[in-house]
Length: 111
Image (cartoon, rainbow, N blue to C red; front, side, top):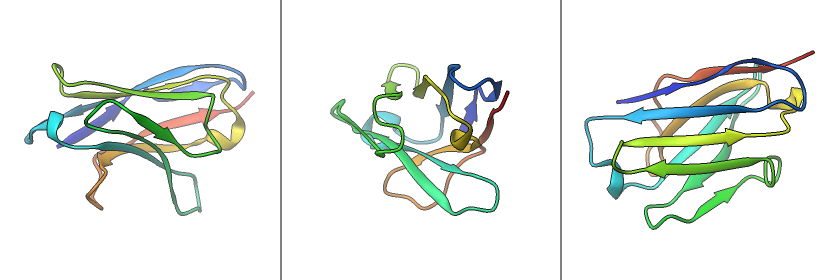
């Protein structure tokens, strides 16, 4: 089970930190990803946090977003800075190797 949280309404240029609590599987053994879906658009990959600690990002968020994981807490994080209106979406976490995703959290960037 995957449960994202931490979303909300923020002004352009603001910051948010998302969390994703994982349960029911060995979190430390899986690469984990963040994806997002804006209204009326297809799902977009945002970032992957690999088992060995490396991270990778979509060009649209590179330099602004930072993914991390705490395997002792079975939690994935996404630190989002300098948010833009185009970042508005429902954010989900998922096992990178799986098509299913947990419950998302809505991020709205608007003045």
